[in-house]
Each structure stands twice: as structure tokens, then as C-alpha cells.
Amino acid sequence: MATKWKIDPTHSEVQFKVKHLMITTVTGYFQTFDLEVETEGDDFNTASKIEFTADIDSINTNNEQRDAHLKSADFFNAEEHGQLKFVGKKYSGDGDEAKLEGDLTIRGTTKPLTLNIDFGGIVVDPYGQTKAGFTVSGKISRKEFGLTWNAVTEAGAVVVSDDIRILAEIQLVKQG
Image 1 (cartoon, rainbow, N blue to C red):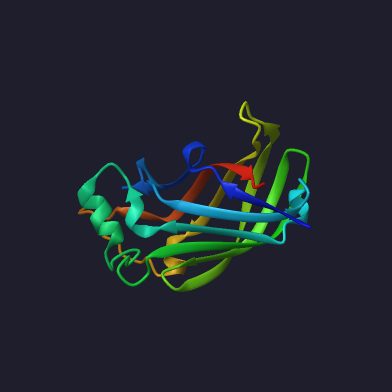
Image 2: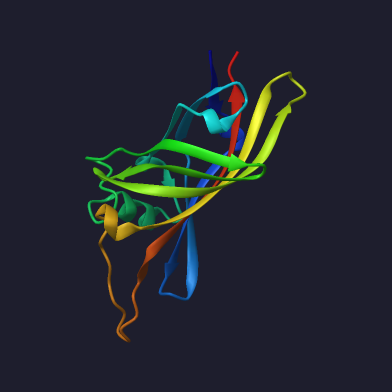
């Protein structure tokens, strides 16, 4: 019988980081996201379902003008593609370290992605809920997903890098 896990959004965060002008890093995050996982017992190596979604309209980089640009057709095109989605195909871990292979869909384009997972463990919280914790990291090329907008400075520097780093702190709650 499958064990179902749901994300605890109050103890989870999903961020992305991108180089700006190739000299500093801008951090953004999604405020609205969901994750469902099904395993056999508490062994995530047996995961038969791993589905993550993030609402594009929930992007926040602490700059309204930049957020609006990211939601526009230049980047995510939130009007036509309201969510990004990751479907995990294989979780393979030994101890604290794991890899999660799956498919990431952004703006209607799906590409394979392997994420690095640091498994924090499983505990029972003071309210009797069983929780599992993960730190997730990875990197994508935004251009592979059709996010191709860019500009060049007067001196010839690129405004936004192609590489996007993904960082997430995920806490799952076992469903009763």
C-alpha cells in the first residue's frame, strides 16, 4: 500500500538564482507551489509518484518591475503557461545523498533534469506528524526552455546569464 506525502508549504521554499551582468546574483522564489510523493513505507527509493508544480504568477524577486518582466512573454509567459512542472521518474539514494531524475516542463518545453538531493531524515514532530526533509539543488539552461530574452551592455556584457541554479528546502508530511 502506497504511503502518500504532501508538501508542508510553511516549512518549504523554492528558489532560483541567476547572474545579473555576470557580477552579482539575483535570487527569486516561488510563493505558491505543490508537491505530492508516493512511496512504499518511508523509503523514497521506492517512490512511484513525484509531482511538483509552481505557479508562475507567484514569482517574487523583491522587485515588482522585474517580476512583471519574468511573467511576460519575454520569459515565462505566465498568461499561456501558468505553471512549471517537474515529474520525478527515479529517486536513488544511499544515506544522506541522492539523485532525482525526472522531466522539467517550463513554457511548454519538457527536458530531462537530474537534481541533487541531501536527505535530512524523517522525524515525528511535536504534533505527531511524520515529516521528511530534503535540500534540493540543480542547474538548468533557461534558453533550452525558451526563456531566451537577453540584452547586452554598452561594454558587451550579458545582462542575464543562461545558467539558472535551483535551490529548494522541502519538508514533506506523511498523510494519514
